[in-house]
Length: 206
Image 1: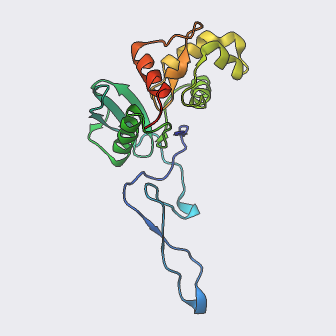
Image 2: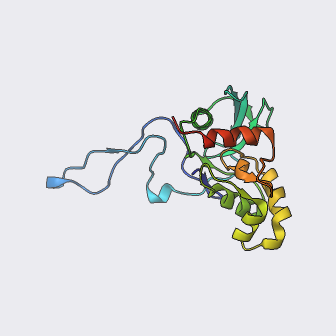
């Protein structure tokens, strides 16, 4: 499942190159240890360098072709902030980055039936209530569906199912947050695109 970050919280800058980090303790005979490679995609920094990155980091966006048509992805350098079907002109610089391209690759693999979860960090902007709803929706397993009323009950807000539905419709990162897994009370998808996404999840993975 993709990782959520609130405003004021952020991972280190997303980079598509392997980074190196060194331990500060000496090795045998007082010799310095060799640097160890950090996992690809994230840079491991010393604790003192892990300071929150402001949410005003310059945004970028780019439109990628998929089997469902163009998908526009926006990011702020540390997390994906928007995903939308169709070619969009969003605030920021129109250029691909390591993060938007990785998100696009994961989305294309999902649409091809080759991926069931997303691992890119994301920071959809919204109220505290909306964030609560989106995190709950992100926990709906691949291939499963639920209703806004059931999700509201999961949140301990059984009388707020209409507000839950509105929060789902307002989510700026659909697909990464699987809002398509919320169906009507009669079990029907809420749109044609959502029906197509659910059909992918009902088929055996390739």
